Image: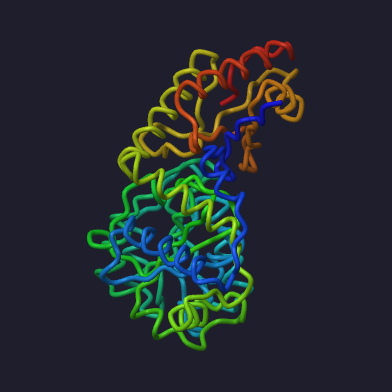
Length: 370
C-alpha cells in the first residue's frame, strides 16, 4: 500500500533518496559522522548567504526546541523582545518568552494582516529597552507571509537584534544575510529542504553567539555551549539524531542538484497556483488575499454546508491518498492544504480531485463560508 501524500507544513513527503539515506547506522562520535554534520552546517549557512558572519548550530528536536534555544541563548536575561503577532506561532514565541522570564512587547495584528513595519518602527523608537525583534517569516497557522526584508531593515536602523523564525520558508523563499541582516535564523530539517523531522538549527551571528555565554536557562538548549563544544571536538554534546542528519545531507544534495532556492520556490509556487485554481473551481476560497499568501500552505474557508464535518472529510481524503491539516484559526471554520515537500503540481491536481470526490460522497456542496 502506498503511503499517503503529506499536504502539511511539515513533516513532509520526502524523496526515496532522502528516506534511503536513513538505512545506514552511524557512530555518534565517529569521524565520518562528524564530517557529515560539518558539511550539513556549511551548506545551511551558505543557503542563507551568511558564511562571512554566521555559524550554524544544530540541535536535537523539533523546530520549537530550536526557537526556544535561540531566544533563551541570544536574548540576555534582562533583554526585552518585540513580537509582531499575527498567528499561532508568533503566540508560541510569546509563551516561550514567558517561560524564560524574558520581557515581551506584543504588537497584535489580525490573522489576515501582515506585520506592520511602521508599527514596529514606532515601537522600537518608543522603547529603547527593546533589545530584539522576534519575527515569524511565514505564519503557517494561516499561510501569511510577513515582510521580512523591511522588518530586517528597520530593526537594523534601530540597532536591535532580529531573531527570525524561518521554519517554513528557509530554502524556499530568498533570505540573504548580506541584504537582510539578522542575529539568528531558525529552521528545521523537515521543512523546505525536504529532510525528515528531528533536527532544528540556528544560523547565528558569530559575534552575538560569542557574547551569549551564561544567558541560557537550560543545559540541553544552550546554543553557546553546543557551539563551543562542536567547534572544539566536531561532536554533538549529547546523542545526535544520526539518521536525521544523514537524510538531511541527502536532501541538501538533491536541493543543490535541482538548482537550489530559486528552483525550489518555483516548484512551490506552481503547487500553490494549481491548488488555489483547482479549489476555486470547486467553489472553495482561500482565507488570505493573494498578495500576502506564501506558497507554503493555504488556509481555505470550510464549506458552509451543514453536512460538512472536518473529521469525516479528513478521513475520506486520506483514504484517497492525501493527508490535510485542520484549521488553526479560532473564529473561522477552515482547513489547510500544504504546497511543500517532494511533490509537484500534478500531485496537487490529484489532491484537488480527491477533495472534490470526498465532498461529493459526503453530500456537501463545496461552496465556502466566508
